[in-house]
Image 1 (tube, rainbow, N blue to C red):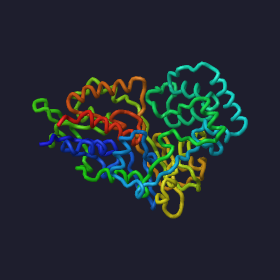
Image 2 (image 1 turned 45 degrees about the vertical axis):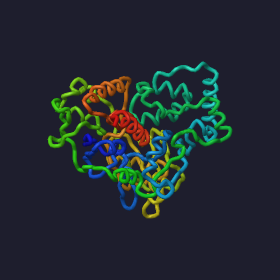
Image 3 (image 1 turned 60 degrees about the vertical axis):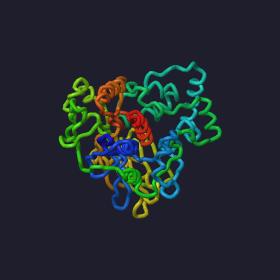
Image 4 (image 1 turned 180 degrees about the vertical axis):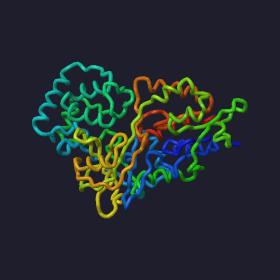
Amino acid sequence: MKEKVAIIGAGISGLAIAHHLKDRFDVELFEKDSRPGGLIKCDVIDGNLYHMVGGHVFNSKRQDVLDWFWGFFDKEAEFYQSPRNAAVFMEKPIGYPIENHLYEMDDELMEKVITELLEIGSEKEKTPQNFEEFLSSKFGLTLYENYFRPYNEKIWKKDLSKVPLTWLEGKLPMPKIKEIFLSNIKKEKESKMVHSSFFYPKHNGSQFIANRLSEGLNINLNTPVDTLLRNEENKKWLLNSDKEFDFVIFAGNLKALPKLLQNDYLFDFQKKIEELDFHGTTTVLCEIDTNDFSWVYLPNINYDAHRLICTGNFSRNNNGGGVLTGTIEFTDFVEEEKLKQQLKKIPFQPKYIAHTYTKYTYPIQDMNTRNLILKVKSMTEKKGLYLTGRFAEWEYCNMDAAIGAAIDLSEKIKKPL
């Protein structure tokens, strides 16, 4: 008889690890929402596809992630492949990454940036200790003050000197000065980034991905988990007081775990878990002017939005009524009236269609977060309770990274035949 596994949460992490374990174990998922997907869920409003959090696309630098993902889909028939055409809006669109498109800036700003980059290139490279030091020492104060600082402060609402580099490892631009100048001289597009091109479903956006990955799985929708108790006599877990499992995968929000466990195992960590920092997102679905961009980053401090995701350009099927749509992101909760007032200041003349607020979207790490998570995992895994996912592990990860983490965890917990 197969061992029984409960997976709490049917977002991309829960779905991915369920598939990796289902051949070896009897797997059952529990999802509090009425449909799977977590942060990659989409709605349809007036015929327009609405990414309620972000604009989720797929690609990966990990071959095992690519191989696994494409085992579920017909790449040619069901997906578009598009180049990433992003821009930074600084009175006009400037290509992204911005350091490769200095030639598109006004002359005065371009000359300041080039002068600082030349000075940086002539100095001995220093090891930055935080996010602020990294950006200013890598790209110079002019680019830092005009783009990197205002844009990142709008997203994170945090002193960038308090942001550890480990948290953003693998997500930061790392060009050499020589590479920056060559890219500008040759006017080359960025091609080394994982998402310099991306795959996107022709219909229904990332909800299509979640729905397909749900097929063949035993998922209990509309089923929140209220209690999770360990029976030390038979070494099994009792979920919601009526279902017994040999071990549990937690792909939910770590802040909810102490209450589920009734503090039996996490009492020593409860206060630190409660103090974990995060931000939510208010996204606004809008009709926008015709353009050919995928993402537009918004450093302008005259409004609070930090990016426009032109999801209508990902697939023309995302648009209803012959208009182009996109989502505009604000950090944390913003009232509807303020949103509508701010839309008047944002480029591409956005016209309000709908908005939503999601409380947990961006986990924020400090210098001690990863050490805390390691200690929690070390304790829970001894009891047969494993963590995976953005908010279970408090990691800022994209969809492909979440799938990769699920693959890694599944290999760790599979037992020899």
